[in-house]
Length: 490
Length: 123
Image (cartoon, rainbow over all chains, first blue to last red; front, top):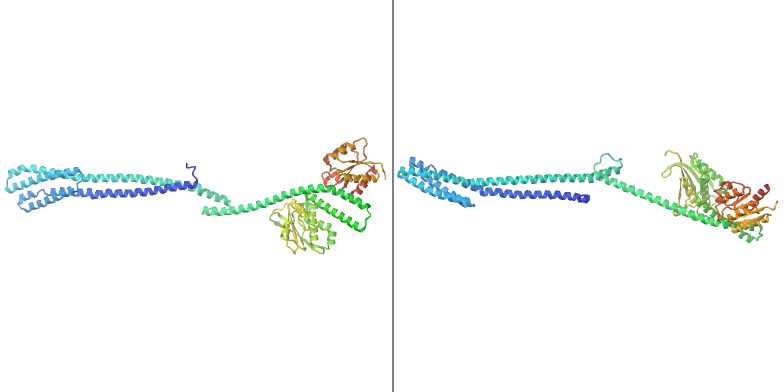
């Protein structure tokens, strides 16, 4: 049952038990004070008054003794008057006692006291008469009877007094018993509360504070301060950190998934391109052969010659597209060697010297030292540079200026890298175009296949490098190639 | 120009095959044609043996590697000129780099004729 409760309900249960015990303890105390009050007021109101009356009754009786003897000795009637006073007091006390008496036993004793007292008074009066008249013989006869009767009444008064002392004793014993019981109850309650409090503390420590502390230490990864003043604050700080981390991881995951999706798309596009190119190439070659044959023997007019030229030219264009398709679809087999990218730049510029002249383009090379060697395929890298330079020439038209700047840098995704910036002063491109530029089959040129930059990007990716495009419309474009420098410490 | 040689032309595109056959006939050779791998293997080992084989190994019924291996095994002496796309021959660099490889293009027929003439005269 306990194990099936969840933590929150367990804590609620313990707290409820604590509250119930505390409230019931308080209620028991209130009840006990009422009970004590009743007990004591009973003692004070009834038994004590009863006792006082009984004591006074006895005293007023005992006081009656001796006066007759004094009277006999000096014959002063004052003694008899005082005896009368005490008799009056006794009668009043007896009446008070009769009013207060509420049990049959008390009434019985009081009844007996009254009758014996009356008898005593009568005998006593007779004794006084005997004194007055001097009948000494009769006096001597009556005296023992009178003495016996007096002491019997005194005994009765004593018995009556004892009834009240017994009752008081009883009430005291009862109060003692109840106090003892209450002490037991209070002791048990204290013990139970202590146990529950300990249990609550245990639950709080083992189920909440302990785990929170461990979690905090784990979340801080041992980097935080050794002492944690407030676990909850520390934990919430850590959790906020974790949430941020998770957000970042999620973002990176999203990015890598996009990248994967892009790669899958590229692979599919590659397959499609390869199939298409393979199917087109064969009949196209046949067409080219027949066209060549036709060209050898045909005697054509000028217009016919122009038609023929255009046909040949367009077929060559189709052929280029097919070649690009094939190249794109077949990942190049890279032949890696240690080479400085600066050498590749030189190779590309040398290869393109005629083309650059034809475009009347000036190339400025900014190089302080040759770039550090990287592991790469010079032919493929050269193709990348050729592609980018030709693109720049085509974008700028005649008389453009190209700046090639080389540097080494440490980049976030690549690490230590050889970097080549290739800037032109052509028309540039919008952000949207720049973003799409490396997608396969995206082209802004009439005769482009849209594969040049795709192929370049793939070659760089196979070198674990990157290609970045920075451009704005009317402000030229800068292509940045970054290739990782292998064996670097960082 | 020495004539009277028998040449077997193999290409799975009949128009390419006919064109080469026409050109070779005009150059004075006797020509036979084969349109698939089985056809090639049958004709090179038949009674009427050929002097030279022009081959595009991209054929529908047989893998190019298997065909080339069988030819080497059955007719080691037969000169073979590969007339194909270089991209199709990347798996066989020994042919790609030899002087018996002619890249298939629109104007490759002239190059093909020169290679064949060289080979047959040298014999």
